[in-house]
Amino acid sequence: MKHLPPRRGLSLLTTLILTPLVASAAAEPPPPKPNIVFLFADDLGWGDLRFYGHPYAQTPHLDKLAAEGTRFTQCYATGVTCCPSRTGFMTSQFPARFAKYPADADFGDRVTITALLKQQGYATGHFGKWHIGPDPSAGTYGIDAIGADPEEPGGGRKASATERGRDAHLYDETVRFIESHKDQPFFVNVWNHIPHAPVNPSQTLLDAFGPLQVDESKFPPQMRETFARCKSAGGDVSEHLRAYLAEIRSIDAEIGRLLQRLDELGLREKTIVVFSSDQGPADILTPGTGPSEKAVAKKQQKRKNQGKPPLIATDESNPATNIRLNAMGHSGPFRGGKHPDLVKRLSVRLEAWKATLPTAYAKTASSDAENELQ
Image 1 (cartoon, rainbow, N blue to C red):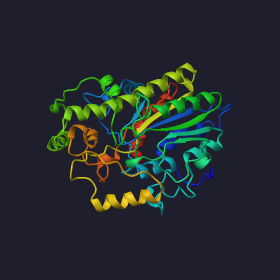
Image 2 (image 1 turned 90 degrees about the vertical axis):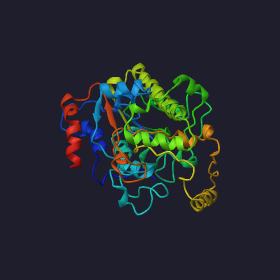
Image 3 (image 1 turned 135 degrees about the vertical axis):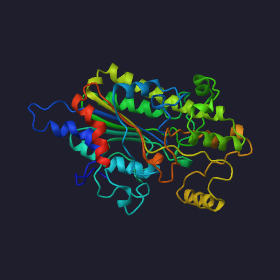
Image 4 (image 1 turned 30 degrees about the horizontal axis):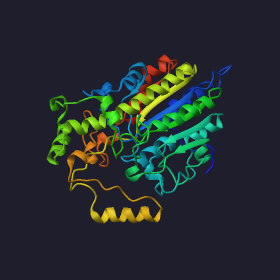
């Protein structure tokens, strides 16, 4: 599907991105159009970053992004699972307005942020998770270059051959896209698989993170409930949390490389970098709490009909190797699970960084976001 003419209203994210374009319409001469890099984590918890209070997270690059940029702490996702949330980001539409599930259908006649920017002369790219329609080919939604990974069981991606982690290839592709379009305005989605299940970091990533001995008193009661469920299944809280945080550390490192390359290309002053997550983290799946056998069989048949590989079976009899217990997402002060309609699922971090972001706009951004939700 090719890009479509604008028809619908704008979300907070769309407003953030397009404000410099609209504001410059009456100015002479108009300022250069900013580049935009949209970094999207998958199932990341509010409290999974050091800057947001995690006592053990190793996220120096994202912490710096938050410290130097603007934090939008009153933003809410439009859905409690992957596709609905991404639908909201791409279209500014509440996902219940779509008659068919967009991951299986598409956005229909709804305009997308990529189509709008394409009309403004932007080069547009998308690398990583897709989950927003059946056609991940160039031209869909006005996107020039698409490097969408085949959907793996659970919506994630198996461990990559690179020791840098399963999302390293996304950043390699993104850097090549930026290098190819450095002399014109560009917009690029970088949609990570991390930390969506399966969380299964390589030994190299575990060693880079280092040893971990968890002091549960440093966490709020709702996170200690997660620890209790892990232990009841025979799991080692320190080892499973270490695996989760090792993957978080890997995408932080990739983001650091991306920001460094932007600096090397002289694009720092011309680029808005936005980081967020589709919704909060998924709860761990202990034995007996996953989908029923009937539900699994139905999904297996659907995957077979679609020509996809079968779901991966995990060894629940061995907690040390049961990677389902690695889903140790931390929601900070919030409660609930990824799927229930509780505030933890809907509240996400949205951080924007740009050295030349207007001071007045930066000061009012958080209050504007809060007013929009009232």
